[in-house]
Length: 384
Image 1: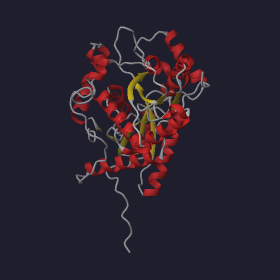
Image 2: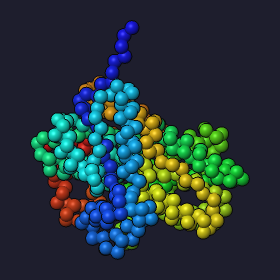
Image 3: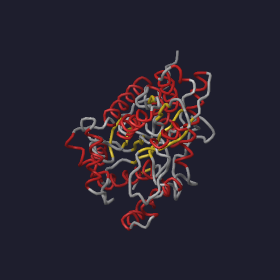
Image 4: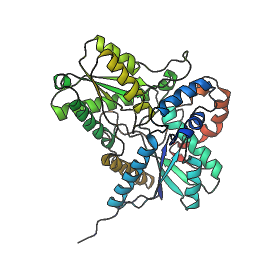
């Protein structure tokens, strides 16, 4: 009998999970929000208002706990499948800060790491800005810093979509029986400025197109599971910024009101834009949208996010091994549902530009030469 050959993660010697970050305690909320809004001129009263969302939940965001759970799930999957890679974690806006993690990786002798960004879709803030964060962290650590290869967007990977399907089926079961079969699926994601949406992805428009594809895949999965179709809509939450700047619409609360006026009998809110629960889910949906639905008498249920589902942990392993095989020049089968196909590994020139540079922001423009030179030629690889 021949022993099963262990999966080959070469050239990677680690996986970095890179996320947004969030506060873990009340005294961390305002410093965290100040980090998020640095250089944007956000008034103090707006920060205080946002801080109230966190205080509603004891001053902590659930995102860090869910990232810890995801890392534990990935480590368990790696161990079970014989993938010998340590898993590190760094955040853009809070501890563990990315630069600190990169420094620790360098101290541990890591030279080449795959990077899972916990954003499934193409956009400046969900992709290109993380590349910039990696570049800045590498510059801070210096020549000892590892090389980083970012994994592709996973919006249409079955390991991301299939848990969402199951969670929608569960949420439908929580509605009153008389309205389950005719409930509307309201797919929710984070709103972004329309200029950012227009320039997302290699040809533009990728943020909305990818979300619509995920929404369609989830709705079709639910139809297969239940033997009936449910109508669905794509809506947005968490709009911020000055009112004169257009953002993607409709807002989830406005849409719920319109659905009630159209005599839609019930709704399942499906947070397809978020890998795990954080403030844009637990406050914007579980508090604000729930209050809107109660006020207008619309029955709703909220589906869970994919989170640390074992199927997603397995998807992370598949994405790491896929990217490793590509780096070695080996043949690769890329797993993706639907018609858009697997996303690219390396972002082309001009992909997901900084919207502040598009608006003529001099600080953003000053960042462009260093970022553009590397992001344009090798956005999937962070090297000197």
